[in-house]
Length: 307
Image 1 (cartoon, rainbow, N blue to C red):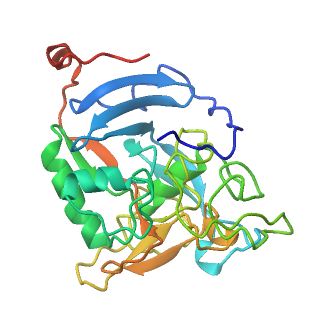
Image 2 (image 1 turned 60 degrees about the horizontal axis):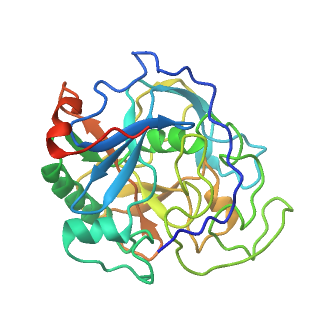
């Protein structure tokens, strides 16, 4: 089934040197799990076979950004401030899309999602604990990497892709840019279609790092709980990660059901880790656990490097 892209405009890639500085690039390229790899206007990418379907991951290099929102931002809530600098010292391979129902079903053998009209819709109705079990299974399938959820700080950094404004494309939003409750306006902006369901994971244009739908469609689970902001610079911050079933975890990005203020890059919400809902999904990252790249192994499998 062909993918429908609702907005053709694509922001230019951030002004990053390529090839990346060795300190900002991946420790091994390509990682041993990659079946194809390359670089494009968004940066480095790899394709990984996960139980049958192929998931593309984008390299999110380490760096600094300003986390949170100013008091003057429309929709601002108190837990988004004070703004502060966050330094992330390690890059990650982050899924360019939320996890699709096709990938989820291939790994788990089941699919409890509410909106099953397209296998490329994001999986939903999954708790944080469900995702944790899924990631363990993915780790067993892939050599040399660990599958994880991004931390809240990594999620916002990846979402912004160098953009300090309200959304990854600027300060306004329309239903042509994301899947949300388009009957509600944001900051006196336009209203529009309210789709009342999920759409395929590659709908709409990606952000400047090639990541699709960091705003809307489904909320995305993060690895950690919500930490309070104190305005101080943070390095690799991580919230609480209690093991109790009701221990909260942060979800980010908003969903098809939400008003546009919930889609803002800084918006924070928390959910019980055992909670399931038709608006809850996730995207996951890979971190290398092997010092060696995989290029020397690929010809034996008949795989090629894509430009």
